[in-house]
Amino acid sequence: MIQFDTQVRVWYEHTDQMGICHHSNYINYYEAARSDFLRSLGLSYAEVERMGLMMPILEVQAKYHRPARYDELLTVRVLLDELPTTRVNFRYELYNEEGTLINRGMSQLGFMRADTRRPCRCPEWFLDRLRTVWSE
Image (cartoon, rainbow, N blue to C red; front, side):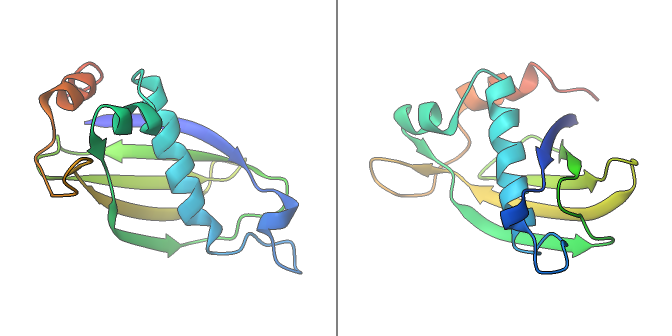
């Protein structure tokens, strides 16, 4: 299992007239957390694509428990419960500044060769990076 935490701030532009974070922004917070997670492994999405691998989103889900508000610093936890094969499933937990769980989500990404745009298995070099932080 892998657990990685990062933080995002709710900007004014992310909120509605009531100062509540608009629901669509949570998907962006998931992506920001995945990007930070990959960078923590020494990879960026740009580098992954230069290496010939693309990772399209196949599915996204979000469950809203409590609202996030303007200027709050949120902790976004990325969880990986199993090593990927042809797809990778990320889970997310978002916490407000008080440590209260406000959102849970998941996204499923596929693996695709950049040159052929055809699905492929998760490359061994990607698995090797994940194994460096994997814990049972």
